[in-house]
Image 1 (spheres, rainbow, N blue to C red):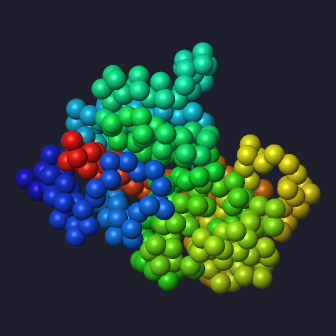
Image 2 (image 1 turned 135 degrees about the horizontal axis):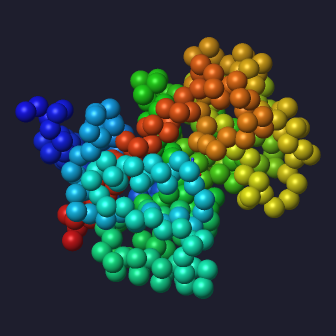
Image 3 (image 1 turned 90 degrees about the horizontal axis):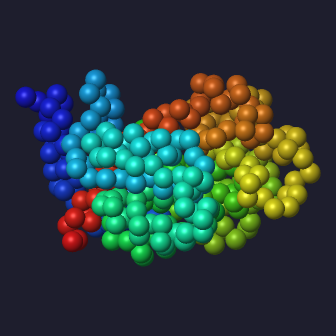
Length: 332
Ligand code: CP
């Protein structure tokens, strides 16, 4: 029976393919892209490409994590990341448990450390954690022996979002090296911007952060980003435009006169997009504030790959869980 039709054989082939890569994955956790090498990021993208076939089959499952337990711990709301991790774990045949802080004993004062240690004590192999505090997932990793994957920690990083963004760029452009990528909007408050920056620079792309002075600090230049405050003066340069949501929940003061003013200067409309390269990719991590950072026509238009990003997230998360679990088992 061929590997395509036989999920057990396919999983063996994928495991063998991952092990044959010149870069051997050694990380039990994925907490940030800043700490990874270019080869390690490429290994995740290549492994995700192998896993992307699973989602195209009539039986969307391989036994790579059969008998393992994945716990989704979300201390902040989510639609895409949470469902994507759940489906990705199920496609690897893991059992999945869902934890939502709002309906848990966190409301009775239980600490993050106690919460994760109690959940691990039930036999969990991988913890997926989203938290409002930067560094919270590092704290979790320091207090458990299972694998921990960061699903977004405050303003710090959202590594699987960065990976799926880069995967989508590579899929559509055939390369990452040399791409000119704009990340536009509320950069100061964005964990997606930081993960994009670290991952893209390592793979040889040029990253420009665009937005008002109040939302894009010059300090990012020290990390390797170009900082521009006038979108219209540079829009024609880019191969990819990744638009970010204005994160009103993380903005404590008035950083622009009004949403209308923000939208007028930085919103991606068809009129503004007509001045971009004809083959530019339009991306957004979601959720979109239609009419603020992007018009509905652009979000649903021909240059948008926003739903491809969501689809690709599954394969990327399958790859990350698979690699981290393998490394954790090799370690212990
Ligand atoms: N992109 C992203 O993290 O979306 P969610 O907040 O819905 O998970």
